[in-house]
Length: 321
Length: 299
Image (cartoon, rainbow over all chains, first blue to last red; front, side, top):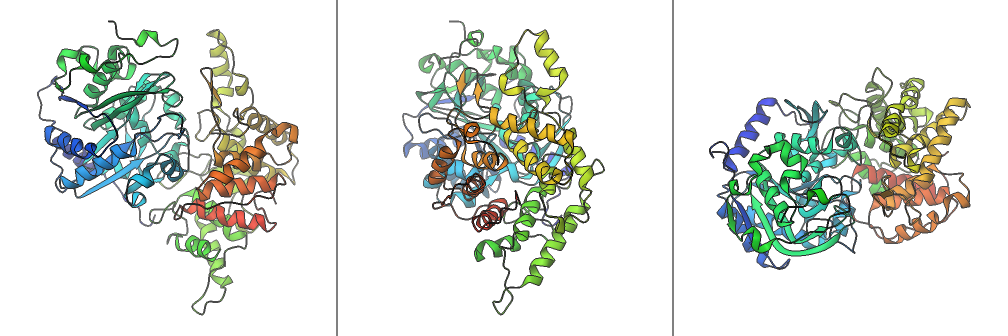
């Protein structure tokens, strides 16, 4: 295997520990990291300053570190808003570079289409991010190592995972705020499906579906527990998400060092009950999802919440008013 | 084509296999497509004097075939790459290679492995579970296709590639069981057309909503459905030509050229993005060969 990288367990553990330090793992047990709810009316130049503010507010010291930005790239449809907006990703790229990161890569492994660069081109990444291809890694075709799952919630015993994310110091999940026709909402934790390599499992990564979608999301969260989350809620998607729903302008960016807390907050903003979302329950337990346990910075949930349309049959996910 | 040829040869690793990108270790998929492209005769490496160097091509093919032969697993299949402990859909690609490259492969064993694979949704356990739950079987799930990965559902790409492989492998045999699987697989593809007439990854209708097709899967499905009647294909050829006009992907446009040629159309590709992966480069070579009358997927 020429040019292969052999990631030892020691290296993997060391990387995970580094990430834990970067994302404020020093909190007391049971205490969730704060979640920022920030106004961002449009995909404008203001996003560059907003990203720098997020890095400062959450004390992300990335000097000399390798950062991987993981947007949500699924399919392209000019009539709706499936993917994380490229302006969000470029603003984050510039902000982490300015914060002293040794390397910032954009990485994604789309679940349906094999032709990742074509998808990224359609979604506007080439025209928005200078030298996009040089900064991008297709996680579907990256080098992989098998990682065993300890006490998995799904039927999986192990997963092959890409070296780009196993070896980074900080993984930043950058999903779009969307409803999901199977699991209620797709946010920073569900976005981790894109880490699983299509080159091994195929397009779609159907092995995750058969192993249990909620359970697989919870397992991926266990593997990458200290992922930093920045959610594109400037224009979200409601209804038949994650692909065929309708645009829902919200003018928000939601961020934090605890994906469970960020996703639970986004659910409340969408007026979805996080305690009904299976993967959040599996990852944290119902009690940990209580609103009072999640410190909020910036806007209050009540001041920005909007009733996202849900498909018929998903009314049980609705947050009681 | 010289630039694609040179790029293809430059991407061969020291171990004889091919990587997906400009750097990285060898994977089965790019190795198979690169070998197929070399076998097309469209790859012309040049020596220092700028002359075509058939010896360099022959040596690259020999090393690639050797890499592939050394990776066949005890169950007859191939894993996507070293370090992955499971045979998968890439096994079909080995069966697509011409006989000059398969001397070291156990093709009977490989085809047997492929024939043992089915979509999990077509198994009796899944269907019994549906019946017990009172759910109806989706009409598109009644035909048996092939999965990407064992014990998962069948999808368009692995089904199309396995059909191409079995057509080639079974031609001299005429085995009844293989013929049955080919018929089922063909029906699977025809049932999985999207509302626009083309193909996506294989989920055409979910929760009451229809999906649209992708360029690359539409081209590949048309290639695998060579011999289907115009009535069976419906608007698929027009959709493919529309995709070909719009796509900027070298991989997508190459599949579309291969598929349209197999269906008797005369395609012409537009401009494409530069610098794609090894699979795209190999497919571009194969599409060029097909435009000159040598479609290695079906000949």
